[in-house]
Length: 415
Ligand SMILES: [Zn+2]
Image (tube, rainbow, N blue to C red; front, side):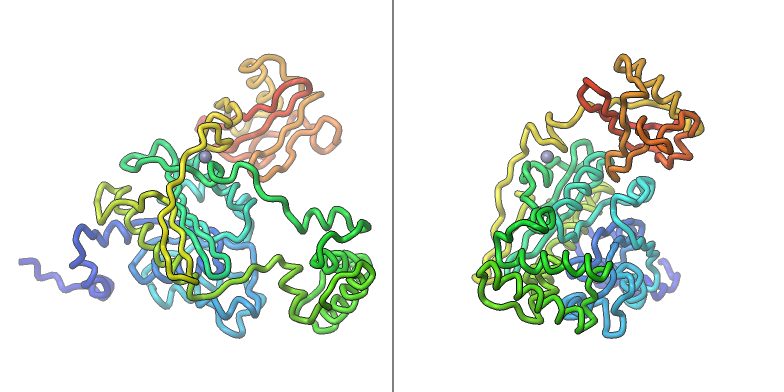
């Protein structure tokens, strides 16, 4: 009989050991990558810390605001202004001192691909479509399951994206399959026409923000009552001119300017719990174990008004721009990271025919950063190495050459 005393860590999970199929070591040795440590992110991270996840990577480019404290349970009064990922890590360590946590206070597009590669799966707790789509692309490229979710008012959904080519898991439709054309960004439209006529009442506030920036050369501070009062007065002045009613109030400003959506903790908790449990099933599946099949169809909607859960049949779009035939052609080029960009042009030319550095623009697909532009002095040095240009292994570069369709070049370092 094994007489080794149980460690304190093991004792924590004695109830788990009674679960059929459960393997605590799988959970302990897993690495989950969480993008967005907001309302959903806090809940999911808390659940996963409690069940004993060994490694967690937290990414959020945001700092804590007062209105977060009613829904984001890892943040406490006094944490306002601090980076969300860092504060979350501090609190999660209290739930689970055995967990390793890495944090990033930046945009998901700026995280090195190497960081993504070391995780088992990716969890989306994002609040905007553009970031979701970029994340979708990364997951498909790196063949990592993406467990995404969102809430809006009293409703929420969970969507499990399994890219093609993951052993033991059947692929599912991606985020882009369901949303081939992203909805127009109201704020962007309004901001593009600051001198134009506001088409909606909310646009008056966006115009007021624009005028605030012009006048004070900074963005308004929502902890400063004077700034908010200035915005209320200016918004009402504009609304009056264009005959919009009712008048704006103090509380309207932050919600409109920051594109805030209605949200409540109860719905967040329901959605996060479902998402967390599917994550545990996927982690087991990835290691050849089973605590139940993955939710099928892989899309669930929850309506909190009527207390209704609905599994929704979703289909892959064969022409999907991310996972289907609509993808740009991608050519893999193997190169040393200390080679000059000139050499890369040579390799691309031999793969696709003439690719003239004088009429070609290169951008990084994910960050949209330009790394070669023949018309900009600092962006046309043929002797720069790929390493100096900060190009990562596995990065996709978009070559836009005059008179040709844009081409994706997947950089693979030969080391
Ligand atoms: Zn797709």
